Length: 410
Image 1 (cartoon, rainbow, N blue to C red):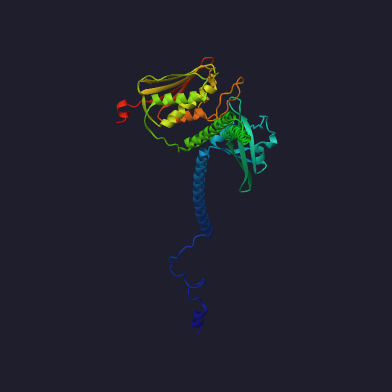
Image 2 (image 1 turned 120 degrees about the vertical axis):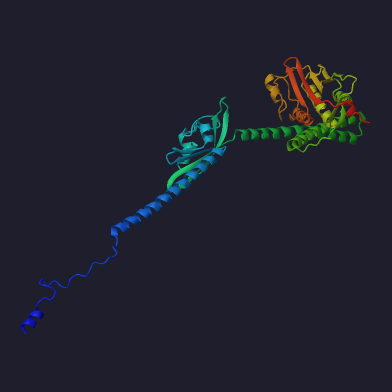
């Protein structure tokens, strides 16, 4: 019994009483530490964020380069400033205008006086104003150049910025001035013959109503007809200029012998100015060109009218026609006071008239020589002028000669 009790009371797995022996070790999965997992996730997120930042930087750089190309291609000056007026960005046009991308403009008013510092485009843009402002800057020769600045605030991420676009308006203002002058001149020149013609016709009507002598009626009718023709010439000049500028002037090009054409034009000029001596030298040989006979006669009559108007009545006018190589030269020479060298390059410009303080205005729109020049160019020719003050002026029209065998009709 004791033995059985001892056997039950004693620890059957040994003296230590520590429990059953441990089973053999088995392989088990080891979970990573929580900190390592977090670190790995953070690294992945940083890597993704870095890639996105690189993509964004590349996109911004491409947009910046594209903006730089756009700004460089803009002819107007462009300037971006912050709220302190500090230049942040400027294109090449602004750098050329101001003398540097970060150089502020020093604009002036219509008289060339400097604008107050608070009224400059840069200062107004810094205050966030939306504005349009005209100002002047001196050119290299000291003459004023006109500009228009337009300012607009920008809102980029809360930063206060503004853009100013500056456009050169010098030519525009000059064109406006010329347009105003032309309208005033045209109104005056068109109204003068119209008023004169109306006056002569009114007097003619009164003479006819009273039954007076027919001699007076003929005088009034002749003068009215002259003024109406003058009005028609002015209107024709305006129409021709419009057609020349629009490329709508058509020429009826045929073989033309300039000898009889020149003689006829001179006779027409003599009829309008019987007191003026017009000498002519054409030679007996026909000189053929390919041209529009009516337009070529118009050129010659314009040159003759110009010579008559700008010279004293006692001085003669010479017309000479000759062949020089493969060209025909048609000269109209007067012996008047001549033209100043500075005016010669401007003679064929639209609306230009030589002004002299000692001679009253001869009227006209300043279109005759311009039309002559354009008509001669349309005939594949050229027109030249030579003048010496105190000796006179010579206009020479050069036209390609046409072979006589080809030109002569069957």
